[in-house]
Image 1 (cartoon, rainbow, N blue to C red):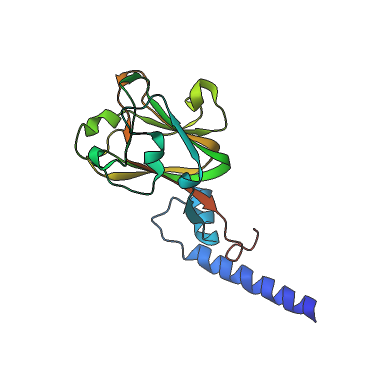
Image 2: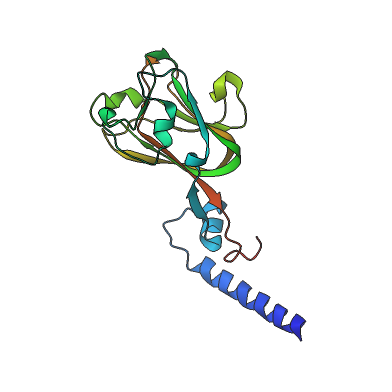
Length: 195
């Protein structure tokens, strides 16, 4: 009898799964299995940045790298919540998550009170290598610009890595990050029958 109930429950799950699949909004790109699976399985996101350890190419004043993962999006430098390097060639900031995660998004808050254009051209890199301080890992995104004081989210759609780097390649610049949030992808076993 318990086997029959288990079979019936599995059948109902399959029907519900098919029903959810067919109801997916047409706004999604059906060529991307990621979006289909994400909707069927109810991926959840968790900011793992605050669990990690951080470093940067240099430190301007008291603007230590930990400021960028303090959970505070305050974007005025004088509020003491921004990480800031010196005027370095290829300045970088690195988050060590201490283990490998599947990264869904990285959200960066830019400085409000000065020089928001400094972040233009920065790259977000994710991977498990510390070659070139982690700046040689695969690229998730290039930041064309972020408005002063704004927070912008970049999709990395499941890239795997322990290290999250933000680097401005090819020029001498200050790198200022007022908050960095990193959302991992988690499968919810309740909502995904094959997990």
